[in-house]
Amino acid sequence: MKLLVVTQAVDVEDPVLGFFVRWIEEFAKHAENIEVICLREGAHALPANVRAHSLGKSSFAKAQQGIGTRLRYVFRFLSLVWRLRRDYDAVFVHMNPEYIVLGGLFWRLLHKRIALWYTHKSVDLKLCVAELLSNIIFTASKESFRLKSRKVRVIGHGIDTVFFTPDPSVARGDWLLSVGRLMPSKRHDLAIRAAAGDGKELRIVGDGPEWDHLEALTQELGARVQFLGSLDQSKLRDEYRRAAFLIHTSETGSLDKVVLEALACGLPVRTNDPALKALESETFAYVRKYHSLGRLIPAMLQIFQMP
Image (cartoon, rainbow, N blue to C red; front, side, top):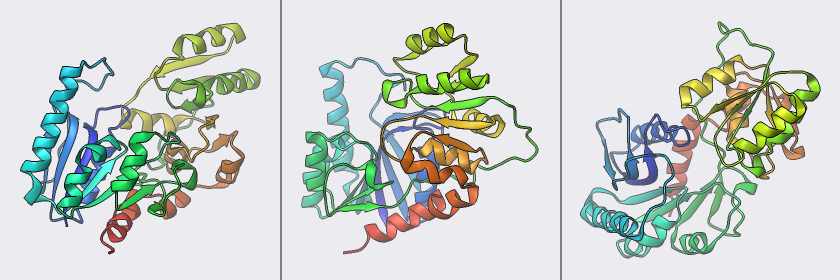
């Protein structure tokens, strides 16, 4: 297979999307060659059969983009889609249905199979159009894709279980860990209250608009909380390996990959989500069996190539 991969960032240092570099590396093991179109290109060491093409964004920090900048991104994207058309026979779009809205009709006319990976509760017009143009849609759990479609395949999360592993040589502390964007749906406030009630220190990994509110709550409760901000994959793994428990209080209603990353590192999980309670008794073996990246990529490519 010659594959075109479309994603937001190719950068191992990106605190949110750094993991996707490993996805590309895994795809490269099973494809003749891969072209990657990304909004932003940063640090990576991709295999020889992979070429990355950036649309030109210079930072992973969110910033207001003017209409002129966005039009330049669109023009650059469509130019690459056309120029590379003989170098790929299938398209994999990661999490951004707008790229299928832009290029989907062209890909369909050229008989390029289109797959979308999407794990979010949001359903909007872009997603509806992308669903119509896609051949197949991959998602992590039945709650991760809320638009009804016969094209959906629930295939599990792609956790890098070569990277996220237990380390018996690292001693665990007695503090708790909460991981995720600092936004209302993640309910870090409940994690802070739980830690305060247990008299435990809490370390929070993530950044977002709720930072000031959560700091104020910490002071109000007299809780011991360290706000670590966004961390790259290596530093996040260190936190998973050193904490006593992961406190999972998210109310997004879907299987959160941070739960699986924690389990892969041997970190026990406490969750408020009744649907995930069974995972409190699972170990890294469960993640390797059902959610490992090494299992996910070949399974997706096999389904992708079916008529």
